[in-house]
Length: 211
Image 1 (cartoon, helix red, strand yellow):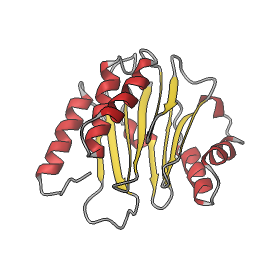
Image 2 (cartoon, rainbow, N blue to C red):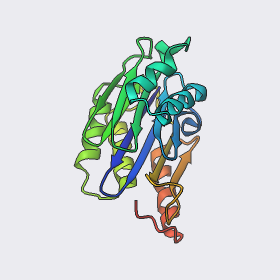
Image 3 (cartoon, rainbow, N blue to C red):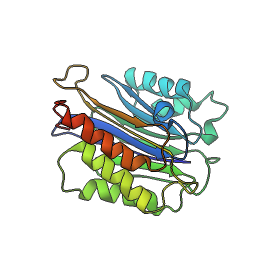
């Protein structure tokens, strides 16, 4: 039902997340960022309470795998959760429950990790990681947009398109000079086109889009 990616840029001190789905308002229920801690994308069966428990564990100093397993321990729907985790040191962890909607796939790449369910094919995730890693751009937001577009070009969500979102923060957030990227398309026939348009508008209005 959803495909997403999390990325980390050590040189520019950035962490970001992007998601697309045939699910209205997917950005509002999938992406969870906590300053000083990291990002969790939770999908297939998204639930904010579980995402916050994962972040609580990460904040308490547990490694990513333990943060996830601890949060899922008492979760009755744990077999339906698909999660991507990243901390502010550039570590990643991915998990797909055995009851997530097939076809499903997840993989950790170099400085990024991606996962999806109800995919047109596993190549959706491979295409996203390849696009992010091979992008000539040095701007994380551009690279995440390109990753979503590559995933969609590879088939995307087998049910179709509706919503997409992207978030990019300095790892020092809320201490950062300019606005973070936090853009969402909640319902649109071509959400990735609209997301790219919004990004252009955002940058054109003196927001100092440098990431």
